[in-house]
Structure formats: C-alpha cells, structure tokens
Length: 533
Image (cartoon, rainbow, N blue to C red; front, side):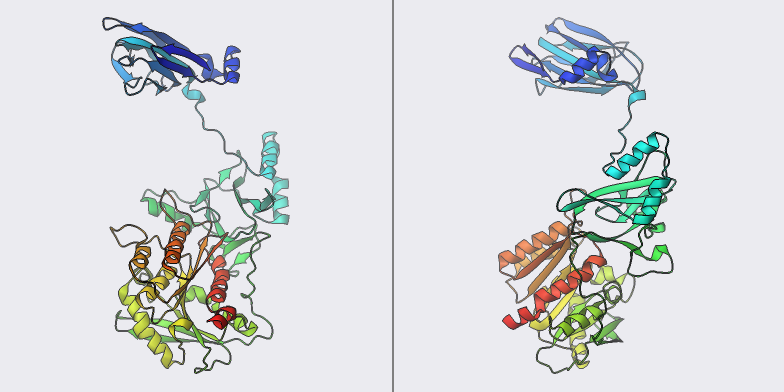
C-alpha cells in the first residue's frame, strides 16, 4: 500500500505486493504500463499530463484531490472527453475505456493538491473472460487430457458403464452432481434440476463434452431433461425461454426414466436420487393389497357454466356410512392418476392401517386454459367445489365432514386448496399444499395476495400441510415458491393454526410430490392424528 497525505486527505492506492513485483519484472502486461501524476494547482493555473491510449484499451486506477480540484481527460485537440474525478468525495476509482487511438491529456484544475495513478492497462486484444470453472474433479482431469491432445473416448466409455449424472462426494451431507451431454453443436440447457432457471451447460474446450455441476444435499430427488441446440428465437423473453421445449428430452446416459418409458425420449424425464433421498414407500403396487375402484363421471357446473370429468376413487371395502370415512379432493386429475399414482398410494396406506378409509375426488381441468383462470383464487370456482361438487359427491356415496375432508394439489393446485379452505372452511378442514404458488396476486396488486387474506380474517378451523422444494427459490430478486411458502407458514402459525411445514431437496416436480402426498396425508389424517382428535 502506498500512502500520501494531500491537505488533510490521506490517499491510499492498494496494489498487491505480488503485482508490483511482477510489474517490475515486466511480467504483468496490465500493470507494466502504469502511469501517474501529482501536484498542486491554483485558480490561475492547471496541470497537464500526457497519456497515450489505444482504442478499446481498459484503464483502471485511483485518484485523490482536495475539494475544488477536478481531473478531466482531454483529446489531442483539447476537447473534453470525460471527467475522471468526483467532486462529492475526496478520492475514488479511476476506470475508463479509450474511445480511440491517440495522445490524451489528464488535466488538473481548480485549487489544491491532486494525485492520480493508472495501475492497470489492458489492450482490447487481451480482454477475454476467464474460461468456465470446472468444479468436478473427474472433468478437471478430462480437461487436462484434452489439453494434452487426448480424446474423450475413454471418458464416454466410463459414462456408458456408470450412467449419469456424475456424482462426487463433497462432504458428509453433500454431493457434487454433474449433468452431461455429448456432441451438441451450439448449446445445451438443463430443464429441471437444482436450478430455478434453465441452466446452461458449458462446453469442455473444443471437445464433445457439455457439462454443468451443482453441489446439493445428499437427500436430493428430482427429475430432469436435457435440451441440446435450443433454437435462439427473436421473440420475447418468455418465447425464447419456452423454446427449450423443442428439444428437451430424457438423458440418454441415464437408464432411470419417469414416469415410465414412453414412445420416445421426448415423452419422459430422467431421475436423480441420491443416497439419502427420503423413501417413497407407498408408490408401487403391493402384493396382497386389493386395489380400489376408479370411476370417471361428468359433472356440469351451473356456477362456472362448464362441464368436466371427475374421477371417483373408492377403496376396497368402502362403506358409504362408515363413521371413520375420509375424503381427499385433488386438482389436476391427469397428473394425480399418472405421475402421482394416487389410487395406489391410497390403496397401500389404507391397507397398512396408517390412514383410515379414504375416498378421493380427482378433478379434471375442462380446457387447456381453464386451469389458469380457475385455480388461482377464484370465488366462483371455490363455490363450485363447496356447493356443487361436494353435494354431488355425497350422492355418489362419497362424503365426510370438514374435519375429515382434505383438499390438495400442487403449484396452482396448492394455492387453490388454501383459498377453498379460506372461503369454505365449513366444507374443507384440511389443506395439503405441494409447492403452492403463494407468490400469486391479481394483476396490479402486491405479490402474496392470499397470505394477506389469512392475516385479515379470524382463525378458521383448518389444518395445513405446506410442502416446498429447496430448489424452488425465486429469480431476479422476486420471492419464489420456497420463500412464499415459508412466509405463509409464519403467518398461519402466528394466527394459531396447526401447520406442518416440509421442505425437501427437490424442485417443482411430481417426482417429489408423489412422496409429499403421502407425507401430508399422514400428518393431516394419519391414524395417529385421527385418534387424537
């Protein structure tokens, strides 16, 4: 550190000792051409220092001056280019890019002492961003092999034997997970995974290896796709983001697919489950468990003016008048009959005696657009649920009081569940919310609208299970599903509600939700809970 006192100003220029040593030896191009100036000016004089610049050259350094002294950069003709000093503070950073080749002048004028120093100069030809960091030890070793002129063939042979993603231990509770793609031409993006955005894979030099790594908890479970050569569109940001769907597909080096092998790789997701991922013991059919029956019927709504399919699940041995009967209401029926095998989960849990006899109503979206208009808080839709769906279900021998009725869903479905209970607690006494979209608000209003509604009303006779993924945090400074679920949890608990809050190492993902569905049922209506009521 160099220090000089200018009329009460203590001026410091911090240059690492190693950098100064390298500069003296001529080993650091950005430092070797350093230049400085200092002195004192009066109201009738100014001081000039010539400096030769190349177009595009980057300069960095420091300046200090007494109050009233300014430093300006002038071109060869004496024309003003830019002011280098700031009259609001006695010292600061000097940083600029040369606009053209030529001899320039640094002019000090005013009254008092000044000092400036250019400590780094970098020509345009040397201005290059550092290469991507290779976090994976295996990939770092491969990079060294490629740099020596080797090939990637042996590496891909290992990948074919071991599968992907690569998993490397970091510490006792975390692993480094590296997603790979072979042979793309322009780009590769990760759809899903631990990122809240579509992470870009980097190319390993000029090789055929594309990669991106994350350090994640060893309890991680997620599904993902890889999208090679995503088209770059000239449209809006959302259109460009959605273009990933054109090429997103399962990982060709990962044998585990979800929900099941489809007609082609574009129909399925790949699965990552690390060693400590929580068990999902109820999702597979069990020998000796009698399956319940699923019946599909249509229901016309006078409130909404539309017709939709309702899938009615009745467990084996269902008796309509049994006093212990419970009812589960779920949105997005297609997903909760497929990716989340709800009938199988209920069959197994009922047979094991961990939940009482529970029938289910799984609600279809009548059109492709209706989900976005019905599930975010919509009084008409909530009234349809309470005043049309549930009375109709009782006529189908499926019914239970509010304390034994659970309404649930994921994303917008979680949001809709909580709103239905807010509007009709006399019908829905339990909310099972999976990654609920509590960031939502009507156009023009502040985010997290529904949370404010719970603040404004008296405590209702409703219990909550709120689940969210650790990989569902917000982007661009905006709160995401993870943060807004935590906020709702805190608000509800402050109001005196009984709330179970569960966070898993996963994302916005049915692979996680098929596990948290059973977790929520155990917490809300499990035999331990029902016995204590």
